[in-house]
Length: 423
Image (spheres, one colour):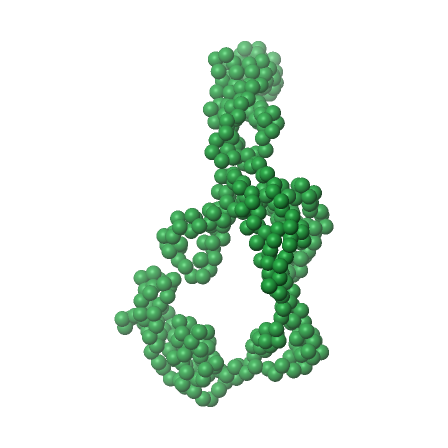
C-alpha cells in the first residue's frame, strides 16, 4: 500500500491512499466466495454455482463490499505510517478502481495540533484577600428573614414595601391588548415591580382603580406592541403588609440551630467558602489567559465548529429565557456567532494545552474521582447515585466527564504551582 499526506489549512490533512491490485484481487475473491455460499442462483444448488456466473451476477455488489472492507483498514494503516492523530472522522472522497486494478481514495481529516509546552509552573496570578464582613452576614440574615416573612392584610392605603393584590388589564389606544391578569401580587417599590408600576400603587386603597402609563419592553411577546406606550388599568383588591420575623431563637430553630449566633457562624462559613471558590476561579482564569498567550496553538476547525454549536445553543436558550424573541435572536445571530467563535477557538486551544500538561505531569482521573463527582451531583439534586451513574453511562457521558475532571485537576495543579500575590 502507498500513501502520501498533504498539509491543508490549519490542522487539516489530506491523505491519498493506493491499495495494490493483488490486495484488491484477493479481497474480491474472498468476498465472491462468501457470496457464492450464501446466494441462490437458478439452476444450481446453493454454493455450487460456477465462480464466473457468481462474478457476473454479483460482481458490482462484491466490489462495494471490497471497498467497505479495505478502505477503513488502509486509512488506519496510513495514520499509523505517518503518525497522524485524528480529532475528527475522515471525509472519504475520490474512491476509484483504476484500470490497472489499484483501489485509490482520498481521506481528509483534522489532526491533533502540536503543542510546544513552555514554562507553565510558577505562573504569576493575583487575588484579593478573602474576608466576610459583619454587614454581609447581616444582609444574609435579612434575606433569610424575608424568606420566612408573613403577609398580613392591612386596612389602610398602600405604603412602600407593601404588596398590592391587583387585577391588571393592558390597553393601547383604548383597546385591550392582553387578557386580564387576576390576583397579581405587585410590590409597592419602583425597582421590584413590573415596569415600575409598584411605585404608582403607593397611596391607593382597597377597591380603588388607577390607569398607569407604561412603556412596554422591547422583548414584549407580541412584537407589534414592543417598545410602545400602553396603559395598565389596575384594580387594588387587597393590601398586604410584609412582616419579617425577629432574628431570634425561634427563627434559628427553623434552620436547625440553637440560636442566631450559630446561624451567623454557619452563614459566615458559607460566605467564606463561596468567596474562596470564586477567588480560585478568578485565578484559574488568569492562568488560562496566560497559557493562551504563551502557546500559539492551531485549533482544529471541526472541533471549533462543534464547540461553537454548543455555545450558540446555550446563548440562544439563555436569551429565550430572558424573554428575547426568536426573530430578534435571528437578526443578531451572525454577530453573536462571530463573538462566540473566538471563545470556541480558545476553549479548543486550552483543551490541547491542558491535555499536554496533564500528559507530562501524569495527571489522571480515577474511578473514585468520577464516582465522587457523580455523588455530589446526586446529593445536589436529591437523586439516587446509581440512577445518576446509569444515566451517564447509557448516554455515553462518562468519557466527557473524565475529560472535564482531568482539566479541572490540571488547573488545580497549575494553581498550586502558581505564584500568588494577594491584594
